[in-house]
Length: 329
Image (cartoon, rainbow, N blue to C red):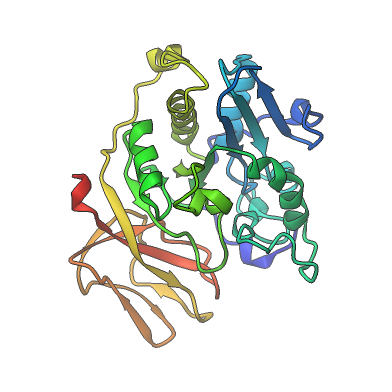
């Protein structure tokens, strides 16, 4: 785990501790760290995914909370997945960025045919994705729990189709909903197979819960999971009410925005014009950054910055540029 691209300075406190996931290694699915709880009653198969990136503990904390409370679905099946466990288990709070992945980004491997490519390098992430893909392919609803490099309002990433936006609105958590296609570098797990096909009943959301190691990210992850499970009907509408007695529901509004432009880095010399944190709203023509001699400007009348990155090397997404969809106002 020596990717020098991940050795950038961390200026944020590590407030979250990683839960011990060793009790969840041996499971009933035959795949380590992937647990299925079957109600025995007909209903949807729901998958809650965590630690797709090894330095994002909030999802693992949410799954650990659920399992320690010994909750069970009332109908259908619930699968709880600790995904990139090799990276997660190597986490070092003194160098927390380094364990995002072992060899490559687990969340860029999900375009059709990639995991079946016999010529592709057998990285740690490639092998793990192949272990879990069959279970994911049988899932009706996926919630993929993530967090962000910089402090920012939580975001619900709903994909490009209206069914994703509709599901996000039905879940009802008060955070902005982002319609986007992901990254030019590779497809995300939330877009895998039927999740990104209009004709399929399958649906998925990816939640960005806040800064990676902020205590608030754990609370957002648990609240999102509770509301998602209620919405998919495998838990009742009063499931985990006691959580809301102890934690005030978040409220960052429910604006729906669409990513209209993805800025993919072309050179080793990309720089931002300012230290953007995310969700800044810029007037059209505002300088955002430069890639060698090419200036990047805000293209929309009101351009919202979605997750400006600290990983500024070629092929990576520097930032996504979005505009508000007024029809959802």
